[in-house]
Image 1 (spheres, one colour):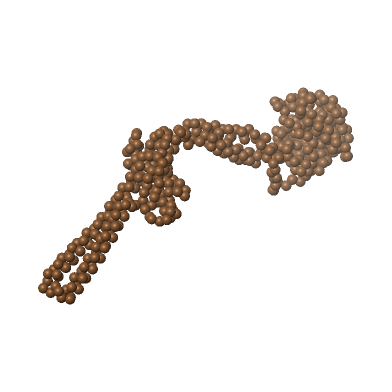
Image 2 (cartoon, rainbow, N blue to C red; image 1 turned 180 degrees about the horizontal axis):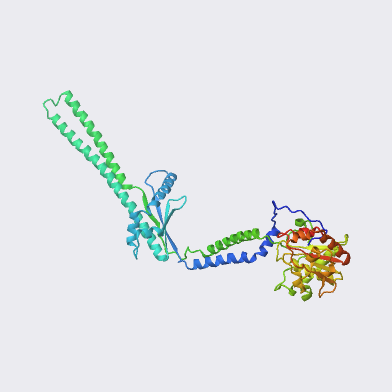
Length: 479
């Protein structure tokens, strides 16, 4: 609706939207069903998906790893922890998996067994934990113990092979030195039986050979000591510290966690959908700050009327005079009277951004409300694109505003038609002209509005949508 109130200048090149908690609460109330429906739908899907999954049980066996190094306690612990991480890789060794898979009943392949196994090293300890996941808790414990046993066997076998190789090498050194000692002893016997055995040079040779024999015998004793130490300390030790037992509760699927994640994801998706819908929604809401947006007061808010059909049923001021829509129109009439208290305003035009938004319905009912308040009212249909007032009031449209503008010599009374409402007359649009904007721009339109203003109390003009054509801007300058 436009009147003598100032028309603001609206710039659309940019905007700044302050989103506060109140606006967020309003959006939440408006789209509450999305906030509830999307998380609920995802929660149902998560419940169905989780319910169809098999329950998995995890059985763990712990192994203690000790290094062969004779370090202090702290270094030994660090070495054992590092060595445990090394043996962690051997858990999925092909030899371990193949041997373990052959002992599982019913048999499984090494690849399947590898997917069931998970291993980890307990932080700050030398404990290696091997876990097996299976749908049968007892079977999971059995497999975990089998895998641990095969790992111990593999480590023991490697230690045994290393000890055998090391002792074999040391024994070869001993045998070589013993052969050399035997040869030296034979040389001594030969020198002692020689004719010159008592000579000084011969005695010196015998003494040198005896010294060599003594050194070799000492080396043999050292090698024998090393063999004993190697046999006693057979490398790193891996022993089962705590065997696996059948778990009593499954670790997966985790229904509560899945439901919480589904609800959280649903809320995030709902928030995104609401933001997109809110961004794409360019309709005018009653919650907007109209005084700040339009530079003028919000006169009234008229809610949509359900089950309204084109024509006579659009006059809810007559059919439902006590309804909410009728009360809103009366509030609009009252606010217009207040706006006219300091300055007489007799002519108004009504428009809307687009078609189908109810401006003609508002115009017709506002005209009825003004007439019922005792104002002599003239309703003019200036919508030469899609005129509707004659259908609303059930009058003819063979003569109207277009004829008065095209033939200025005609008096306005020729086109004016009475309605079923006392104090209310209607000038329909009349035959549609080929040049509506040019016709409305004529001086005749301004003089007609001025002439009617002197004959009636209020002139109400129904004009086309402002975003569709320029006609309402022309009309607005003349009221």
